[in-house]
Length: 498
Image (tube, rainbow, N blue to C red; front, side, top):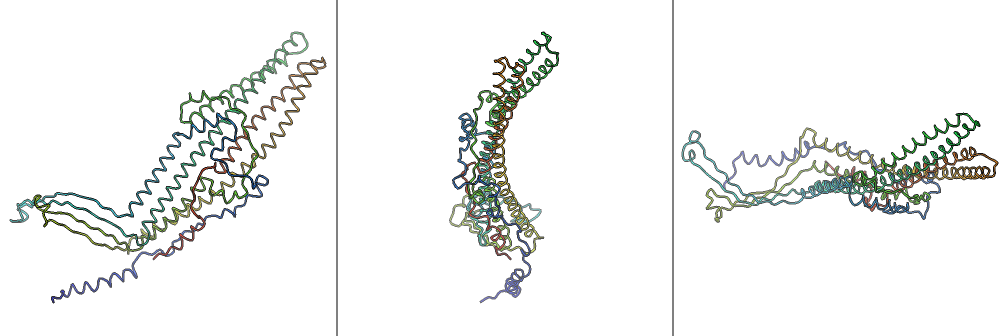
């Protein structure tokens, strides 16, 4: 039996030892690297005392078509028209498809690949470089083959990258849903603004008519020598102010119609066909008893933030897997021949392939920096999740507080308006009985118009509070959240690593 040369035997024996030494002393380490963030416990963020009697066991989260509760068919039609497609929704949907495609790429990267190739290469070596028979002779080679490649996912790194991309895709899907909620709320808000502008226009017209009557009466009294020019000048000032208010209201009607048309993805002419809104219904504010914990699955920004925490957690796993050895398998089966006529002969079979193993030893700190970045990405995602949760609770509490305050203000102003109405009626009765003057009637009308103006503004704000509460509670969107966000820190930190 022929033995190997001494040098080759020494190399064969030393190679495993050198590999072992590299594994034992030289490989990159994850020591000291770990995320520091922890998702907040929603149940620990109490809001029950703040919400008070607004919390009800019978209350439910909004329906997906929550705007129908406001009771205006035109508003229903506008929102449904917008949800069929606008540029803002197209942007959100395109971003969702981008994230889904990225998840598809991550999934493809962890699967075997098989490709076909055909190649022809020729070479002629000059005689000045090599004598005959090599020099001066042209040699051509044709190769046709199938190439197989596969990287074994021994440590779960490829799967973790895919799951991270899935988490980002899920977050983008929720963002696309959130865009629909935002759009419907924006249309509702602009519609309320349009209703308020019409109410303001009515009050301005009534005030202008009152001032015109006051001016005519003042002129009559001056002509009869019963009064001086003071009342005339006061009336002229009131007329000019009322005209300015009417013009401002008309401008507001125009701009709100333009805003609604733009939200529908249409030109300004679309707004011209929007009729005056009817009085919107505003039910008493009510939130579910388990709002704090269940809000996690209803608020799109909170759900999207949870998916990003989940994605960042898998990103840490993928970065840690980079510290381990990788095994790749590649193979090629094909035909090769110097003469194309012999390419498909039985002697042209070409086989090449085998496994390859690699292990990072010295990389200038690249892997540790990559893991540190993944840890920071996770901490950022957790901080954003915690922030979105507290913001969600604050927005619900703010909407409830606004609704309560506005209901109380509306009740007070309604009492004041009723009193002003009675005073105006009484002044008219006294005038018709000859016990008062027209000036008394016109003076009594002004507090009534001011109360009408206040009521219109308060009712608009109350409708906005109702819209905001529906939005803050998630708008009834059908959302799917990760199984648990509170286990993410432990899972991200305890994954074994070198």
